[in-house]
Image (tube, rainbow, N blue to C red; front, side, top):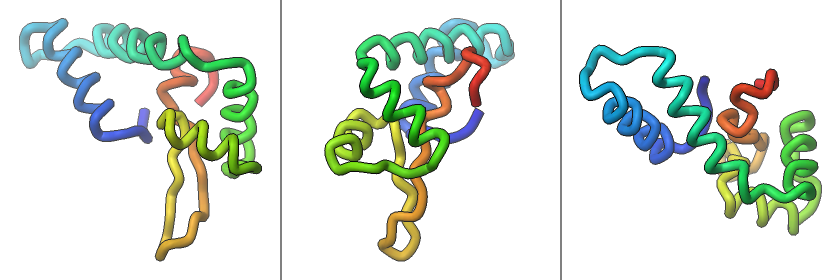
Amino acid sequence: MSGGHVRDLLRILNTWIMEEMSLSLCRDTLDTVIRARRHEMVLPISDDEWELLRRVKETKKVSDDQGYQKLIRSRFVFEYRDRGESWLFGSRRVIWYGKGKS
């Protein structure tokens, strides 16, 4: 799994290590930690936001300013820029984790 915010990656890694209590880390524990983080993230997502997220996932674009503001502020979507120009939007892969969608 890739994509996301470094802070969230470190949070997942810390939780994983705390669950295992050793540096011999098990993939099953990682899956459990990621699913728990995903559950925390998706609880507040409204039906309208899910629809916006689906569109971003499919098109890699945000169509309106209100949707843009909502998704960027919530860190559900990241905007990738090159030389100051926006060129791609991507949804957080963790929110699709375990749903058969990547």
